[in-house]
Image (cartoon, rainbow over the protein chains, first blue to last red):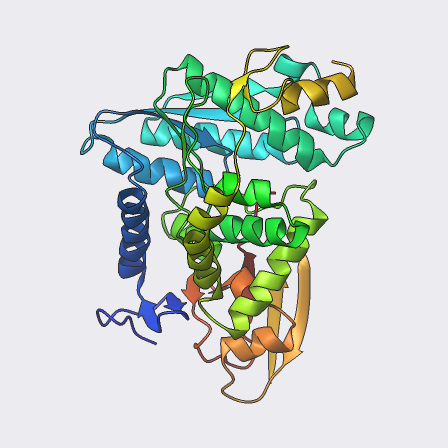
Length: 299
Length: 66
């Protein structure tokens, strides 16, 4: 099969658009989606300082690479932040990949660990605590990333969430009836203690991010986190089955969510953000989620 | 005809009809198209590529992270 735009051999068929792409045109179309998401979401302005959450996986390396390409054009100042949660047999390899990659593209990388900050690794939290490892990881990673981005004086915190991540989160929140999170995930946060987050890859399917990183020969390991939540895995399987039989369903779910978001947002009154009574971080409650988890873990 | 699928350390053989396409091999092997990239030798191939007797297809899982 040939590329729809030239005579070169196709490496990818976009089943939702019916187009096929050679390596060169594939890379071009992924970069267009990235640029379109940036523009549509008005994510960046000239001269911004952007902290990039790096995990060493395909998504964050792709994000860093693309932002690095924009650095000169938009006069951006970029800084990578990697959070080492302490996941035996998983994080170390990604950490090495991230260090090598950032050195190659000329991106400064700051590494912070759960162990250094909370005195426990995620593996230890998972053993000691009564909650799912994803709960500790989600809350503490967010907390550390935000704290680091604040310290760097960054105006944005960019994360590598792809289309599949976004659609899985939408479906999971629907299935759980968690309207608060459905509202929160599509809203921008404005508070001096919260660095606004941007997700420039949120319109690129996971498979396309993986192929982009492979064609560009990024040093990524396509391994799944050993703590991956079973509920997310089920949501992912449902969406992949639907996408296989009805190509384009992921975009439909995302667009549908974007259409209803203003209505559900208007119907809920969100508690204003204030400072946590214990740690002074931004929270909508008296005590932030991080401090509640620390209390449970006795740290 | 027989086509071999390799995914990580796992190897298995799938039997398909002559001039079958990659997507038919994946279906026969119970692999969702959305979850893998397929490499034959050093080349990435699409699901519409025809397979040949004795082909070895490497499946690269696209799902990573948590």
